[in-house]
Amino acid sequence: MNNIVILISGGGSNMRALVEASRRDDWARQYGAQVSLVLSNRPDAGGLDWARAQGLACAVVDHRAYAQAAEPRVAFEAELVRHIDAQAPVLVLLAGFMRILTPSFVQRYAGRLLNIHPSLLPAFTGLHTHQRAIDAGCRFAGATVHEVTAELDHGPILAQAVVPVLPGDDADTLATRVLSQEHRIYPQAVAQRLRQLR
Ligand code: GRF
Image (tube, rainbow, N blue to C red; front, top):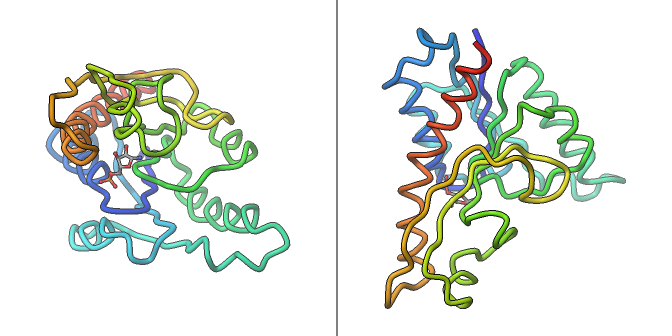
């Protein structure tokens, strides 16, 4: 089976969209693929409850546990890698995973590591994308699925969705509109990648 590992930090709605698509579209039969592990850096990530209730394997590597290590980020990632590599995954999907990854982690999964970012890249890398789009007077906003490279929120673009920025929007209303598109394009982009791997 082609294993897929999903990394989350929060509510996990993108993870949920991916899992639901994998079931609805029978990725196991179509691509021999399955979500084999949901991995969180936060023990309190809301998405873990849903994933566990679905019977999915879950693991937590709490980044705060490595704060005293000589190289906290390296120690944290070594533990992430241990969990991920045990799955020998064909894809590693960042889905609202809020830790910056080192170049060596990114290199390890080169070509297999995807991310969803809530802006129309290359505009608005980093955080607070929706408020920044509103502040800039953008008429359109959106989301991007991309391959992860060493530079934050860069890398080849696999899919994008565009939504209007409406009069009276605040960061929350715009985020909600963008998120519904994220849930559509991330599973589509993953399915396309799985087709290419077939
Ligand atoms: C999404 O907008 C994602 O693009 C961003 O953080 C949000 C996480 O949402 N990085 P969720 O955890 O998938 O619900």
